[in-house]
Amino acid sequence: MNARAEHPILSLADFNQPGNLIYGIGNVGRQDDGLGWAFVDWLEQQSDSPQAELQRHYQLHLEDADLISTFGRVLFIDASKDAALESFSLTRVQPKMDFSFSSHAISIPAILATCQQCFEHAPEVYVLAIRGYAWELEQGLSARAQFNLEAAIEWISMRRIESCTV
Image: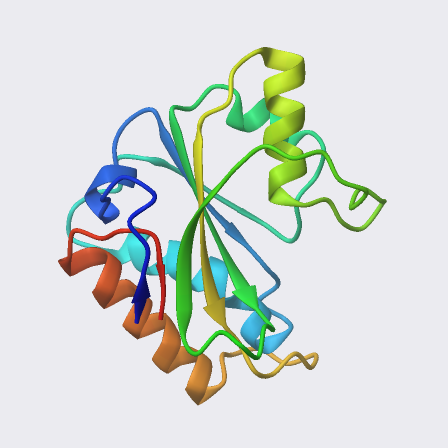
């Protein structure tokens, strides 16, 4: 694990509070692309009712800038194809306009920058990226992605954490 101390120490309890949003991105019909939704599913199944608002969407939309403008802290959970990512990472996102916007994609930093520009408010935004391996039209996570999901859940649930990559 390569921990970085550049951001506040957080745990799942810091996200799972009223006034916060936990947002799973993905498509459960494309194997490991469903990791974001699987995390939200797990959170809903916990004995303690989720305190944060929970959302699931297939992809980000420009309108998500409006959605996040009403929250103090947002945790996005998304699958990653990054081969350099061993298991998962948690990073804080800074607003940044980029050229990612199209009818099929917009980046989280661009959503945050749009939120800041249009609503004069930018919540604290973090991304929990979980490494996936299989992306075919099929339901269910691969065994390796399931292992990474469980590792991320255990890590973010049990520890006070700093932004890091595992």
